[in-house]
Structure formats: C-alpha cells, structure tokens
Length: 109
Image 1 (spheres, rainbow, N blue to C red):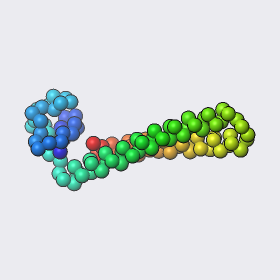
Image 2: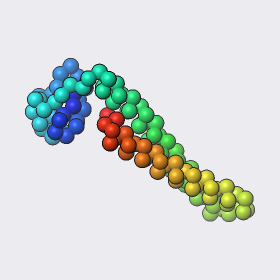
Image 3: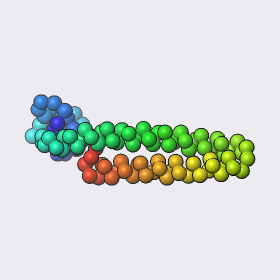
Image 4: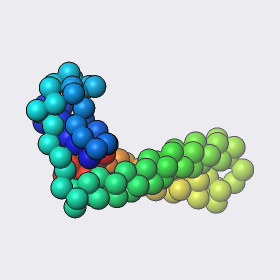
C-alpha cells in the first residue's frame, strides 16, 4: 500500500503509480506504508464501514419514530417514539464523531 504525501491518496499495488491519480503528484511523492499501518487502514475500512451502516440504520429509526409520533395513538407510544428518536439522534451523531476521530488519527482508508 502506497500513500501520496501531497494529498494522502492510497494506492494498492506492487509499486507506487507513476503519478497520483488524485492530485497528479509524481511517483517520488509516494511512500510505502509499513505493514502495521497498512493493517490499520484495512481494519479502519471495516470499522468505519460498520459505523456508516449504523448511521444509516439510525436515520431509519429516527424516521420511523417520527411517524409514530405523528400517528399519536396514545401518550405511551408517543413517549416511547420520542425517547427512541432522541437516542437514535444521539447515537448517530456519536458514530459520526467516531469516524471523524478515526480520520484525525489517520485511521481511514
């Protein structure tokens, strides 16, 4: 795995590309990632993918909860839907923050 030192583009292959497909930097601007760093990129792709899936599910839960609130069958249901909607919003924002933390630590591939 090779990383462009100009734009952080990651290239997977036996060697660095002749020029960066993203920014056009020459091959000399690429550095090969050490095995432990490359493994971290792979792990982060998996974990960040799970977080993205979770965010999508939580958005669906928020929408479903809003429908339940609008339906307004009885106070108990509205209370439950409201609590679930609030928790889903909190959890969704927390997952986004976790991805941002990963990006700040270079755990993004």
